[in-house]
Length: 140
Image (cartoon, rainbow, N blue to C red; front, side, top):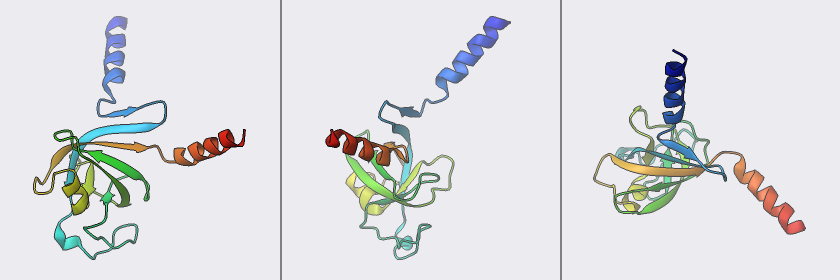
């Protein structure tokens, strides 16, 4: 019985982060589905208060802080784009990020509706820590 519990714990713990990885520099990699804003949202305010413009490289995410820079890559063609989070969404549990139209176009998913992507970003708060470390290193 103990072996069975141990195997269950190892299996559950070992595979709980299949879609998210973190490396030593606190860069997070997630794989999931992306979509993009419909044209009807142009000119409307986002949750952050900014006005949505389809030509800007912005995106919506459910939890990342506004202003977080996220690199989104289309694994089918290797194209990447860096966007800034300025809105909340997408509101489907099956979608990870909602891109502006120009961001979707840059990585070749405009017209696809929904596409598999890889998303990387630095954990919030680490940019300041990295800047402070770089400053300390330069002061030496």
